[in-house]
Image 1: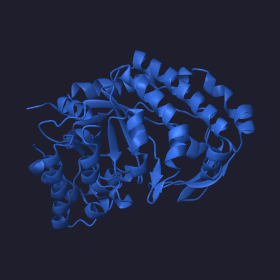
Image 2 (image 1 turned 45 degrees about the vertical axis):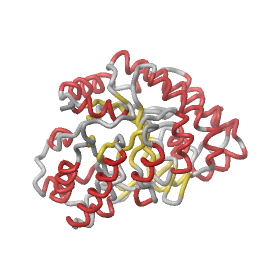
Image 3 (image 1 turned 180 degrees about the horizontal axis):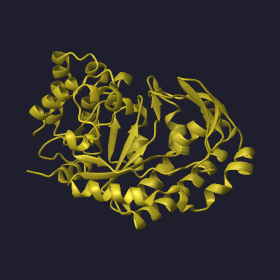
Image 4 (image 1 turned 60 degrees about the vertical axis):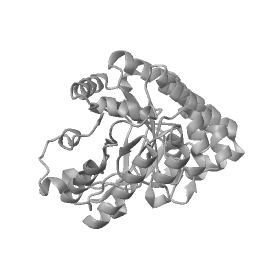
Length: 360
């Protein structure tokens, strides 16, 4: 019988393990504000409690030009408008999760980028990195025998969150050289800082790259624009991680089916979470791409949050049985994150159904 680490390593090598893996992400308030009232033990690590195969050990660091800068522009009991170290102002809920509302952006042209925000990113700054915490988390994760991962967002997410959709998407057509420079600077920035992380905090077993390329109705940009302006930098970062023998998992929300050629070209080893709500179907993807990439997710949250056990059983069994027939490398996971309207007992039941059907 394979260990957790062996299961995930095999799956990320695009091969079928002796069973499917299991992992999950949660909205912060799900366990904190709801499940602890429904029986989940307080101050308990969910990866240990649910016996996941993957342990997320952090790996995030401040990627803004002016690290640590956070200016609260306005605030109520329910929300606040915050300005980041890249000059982006967003409206955020204070007590629950949700998509940030874009309020305003300072980095609206190449001139502003070059004058105010580019230069600080050219220097390695260890103050951005909480090495001690990363090292402690990584050592703890590895002691459990689980597959330990670091994670971070990357260039597409940074463009969206610091330039803003209304500016960076037109710039992909009108000012591509600006965005190429932006992506080049940030790719070098990531590589230089992760060299320090790996040297001083340790090397994980794999990497998560969080990079939302799409939304419910498709990609944010054309496949050609993605291939020209984003894929070369994805390839560089993935190649860097693989120089440390690290497989790389791509998290991308939305319908990213038209991005699959770029995702494969970039060298990503696994696609997560494959939002069912956006038309993604892991069975259909596995029919076309199994052996070329592994899969994590696609268990429909809109079925899970119905808290209807027969419907949940049908959703999970259909996908797991079909993936077994295809011998697809797969990790059980929701099609995004578990929200608070999924009851604790419901989620435990979903895991029961998974465990009844996970062995190949």
